[in-house]
Image (cartoon, rainbow, N blue to C red):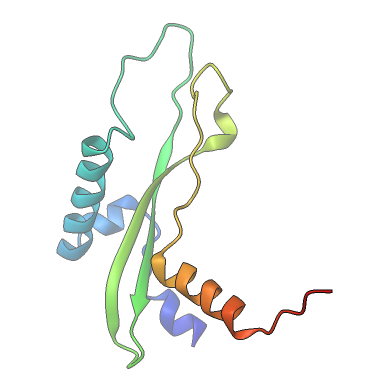
Length: 115
């Protein structure tokens, strides 16, 4: 099964360029980063190295086993960054409402005893 699923995930940007679905999704992600002021282009300061980034691709499947959607993320190679030089802020993953509802329902289902 893992080998079957692995055939759907792309490895390189060049592979993604050959697929219209992935092109549209990468375009949407790219424009979303700019629209939300999470990423912007700046000139490279003299004497500094470029912080590289790469696209990560995942294919999500529905319960019926068919492709549900394609997901991609543009990520930086953070190991080459230094605080205060080429980044100031850090960001964490945002929780989905479904996850919060699940946790709250689990908490509500347990009977808590106060001693």
